[in-house]
Length: 174
Image 1 (cartoon, rainbow, N blue to C red):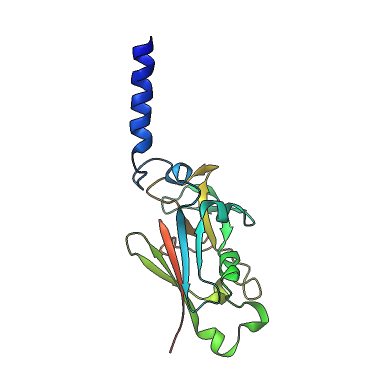
Image 2: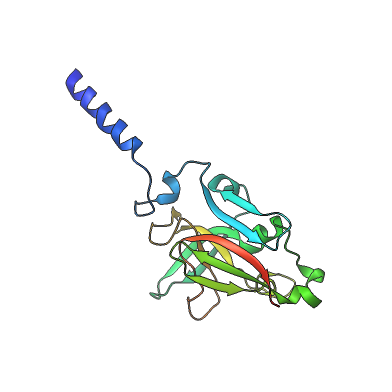
């Protein structure tokens, strides 16, 4: 019995020492709380490096949306506007003049990139909710989708539903 327990402890110790990679199941739930999942940079007042704990402390939303496959799912996460507000991006009445030339580049770990503008995520301009999701149907996103994913429920095509989001860069057109 002791030999069996020693073998089990040795195996568990070896597995615990292995690095967590995005290709493993439930990537988000296996990460340490201090791992940076998202950076927000560029022309912002407050550049951000957000961890799972940081994102978990923000107001949460759940939206229902049809995926590319046509199946409906419940996505949970943080409204993109909340993260942008934390970084100092201006919204509401402040979005006029030069502020209307601001755009956001959302980048995935495979360098896939899409562009949004602040009015597209601002409740003063739209009823649309753009979500930075970390859960689907109550479970962490799969390694193929996450740990973070942009979801825009009312878009007819999911081309801007970025999987494996790692950064948002705020820029101004010239």
